[in-house]
Length: 454
Image (cartoon, rainbow, N blue to C red; front, side, top):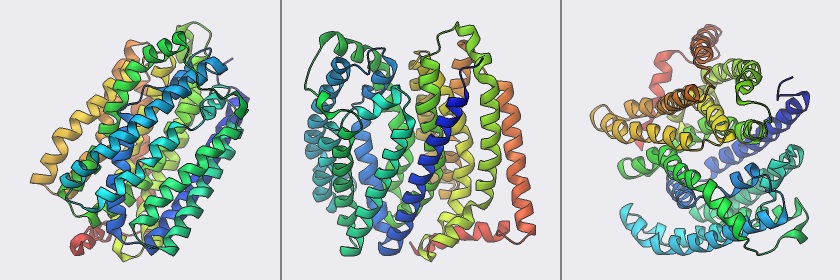
């Protein structure tokens, strides 16, 4: 009997299905907005969203992870204490964002950011007051309810942003759309559980538990943010906003796969491993078989996506964004290591070893900080792109060592699956070229020449 039951497969279907629906909505929204708005506007929002995420993560003590992992997490005393800490944090982040608006605008030499950042800062207040109900449902593994809420969030975001872009095709459509959609979804979160149980409260023993667990989450979040966003922050200073916007389109697509893996890890693997009641020595055999099957399915699906990813850009976007058709296959191929790393991190969190997550993200960050500037300076943007694509390999290596130390190593399995993944990409691409469904190598590389006008 493994910890992965038929019920879990049903849950996986809901998780993947809702994520797929949300990403379709996100894709449709992105394509429509790309038709209505100029690439440089997306470039500016890359900076805004990256900084917003950074400010959030730089103060993260793992409120959600605490609720999921603590045995008292779904009790009102515990989650109300967590919610109160979250509210205080949101207010502090709002004030910090206001103070940083002018220095950030000066650093990126963009006067618009002086006005944009204070408005976006309202999001910190809204998410601060957001109900902890999502984490409670995650702990209880009520994924069906969460799936419906995620689709609702996607619909709200799509409708609000498109309506505002039609009304005013400026940067403010994206800025106000972010604030308004966050407000609606934050209000809706109180109806996922009984809203009457929410109280402003501080229970010292629960606060102590949250801080104790959260110290490594905090460290990991800082490194995670920098590792995930160093490329955006660095490119924002070194390349034109229009090229940054095109790169952001490609990153959006490649991140979809990585975020799906992260979602499955957080919703399925982490809670299951955390709740595993048997001896640790039985954990690896319990997850090995399904892990192999899941990664085999991922290799088959992702390899095909990599092989056709440039066609997606060509079909959906106009010529202003054509260079993303060159960027995307490179970035998409690198998500394989992101998938492996995410599963590893979920296992480490499940056994209470959050320090390994911080170490893994630090390994990735060190690689990016050293290699990206060198590649861009001496070999150009394509070399920097390849450096970014393989960055999660260093995160994976760190986690592989940690898993071996904890008796949860799957190195041999991963080597076999990586080889299969690469062979599948080559096989799919050769077949599709022969069928005339995708461009040959020369045409694909020529997409990069489309950046000459930005």
